[in-house]
Length: 382
Image (cartoon, rainbow, N blue to C red; front, side, top):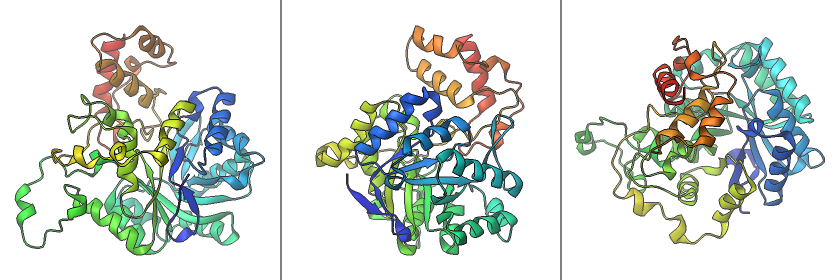
């Protein structure tokens, strides 16, 4: 497994990383074994944004006895309140959640202390001179977190963080669909004087192109989330390009962005880990995404669920991400597979229970019309 230096942290992380988001969906022993298998394959970095106790316990037990083989991205601001994920800057809850993270991971330090999910300029500004940021810096001074990072989907706020000098690395959503120019972009703008057009990143949104270059300039390393756009890029019917990309092509795309050190892939099976680490011995032809993107339309990836979980908490405890995932899988096929129907019916709370409050939509980074999708899912499955 090849390793890259993660910006100014000085940490050498595996090119292929581990996104731990779905660990809690499997039996504990199965997920522990999955992490251990990933370590055997040379994967040494894992992201733990999840505040739920089960995921944290799994990671802690999997690292027991080999903590030094893992670099952990642990998030500050991702909390578990009354059985639900809540993003907050309230130090009372942030501190409780972080101490819980250390306890469950059975460690006394976190390699990368992540300021969790900063997606608006307002949120970035509110963090400055706050008790929240004071707490983060205190942890860094004490060595409880070794390096300060941040997670974001918004290039504007990410650029502000990079320029501030506060962060040493960035967790950012990178894939070809997200990077394409927004829908409705006036292409005449491309021809105006002063337009920053990057020949190496042809068709990329200028803001995102600037962010990657800025990270390179400031030596802020990038770890990649959502590199597969929730799996949509693997299906020509769901891909915004009308053609499918392979996991290897998506991995290569992410790893060829400036400043990128590692792509954190999600895994359900050992076979999926094998497929990802196959990148290290893949041929140039197998990794070639350029031939696909050369003729790709210029439009953005917006309004589509990537199952990131930021819609939580739901007022009626719907697992929105999972319902959306089952719905997306179902509409791809002429008939709903009985196994998929069964999985949906085993959910504790069904889409029909949605009360249409749309509070989840205010937290969605991608503008998904969640309430509308819950209605469609209910009609489809129920």
